[in-house]
Amino acid sequence: MLMRSCGGNVAGKQGRIRLKGRVFSGFGEGGFYVSLEHYRKQFKEKLGFDPYPGTLNLKLDVDSMKARRILAAKDGIRIEPYSDGQKCYCGAKCFMVLIEGKIRGAIVVPEVTRYGDDVIELLAPVYLRRALKLRDGDQVTVEILDH
Image 1: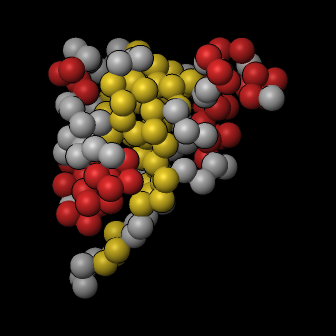
Image 2 (image 1 turned 90 degrees about the horizontal axis):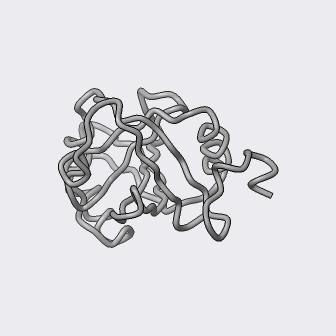
Image 3 (image 1 turned 90 degrees about the vertical axis):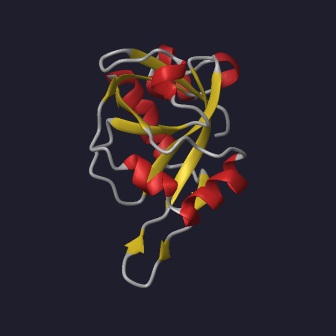
């Protein structure tokens, strides 16, 4: 079904969804949010790892945009919103992924974002730019592990 809906190159082995995109520098806010204790605790409990304090941003290619829309309809792993008494912080959903066939991580999809549907943000227990020797413009493939 996924292959019919999205074209042949977005479904990996065993029908897993694969997304491809190019690395770009974001607004520099990911580290702040990932470091908030409320979120970190949930990431550790629900994703099984303590994320590096930042996200890797990917601008998706056209075929991956189609698969991203299918993913958006899925429940994912819920990250609960919270308030610190002065400010409210939105919730998110996450999807476990394998990044470049090497590193387990997660796509984080915040309920409120400054990015469009053509962007995904990745969490991992390591600094992905260093671990994978990535620079802006490099292509990265992400395989969804739980959909």
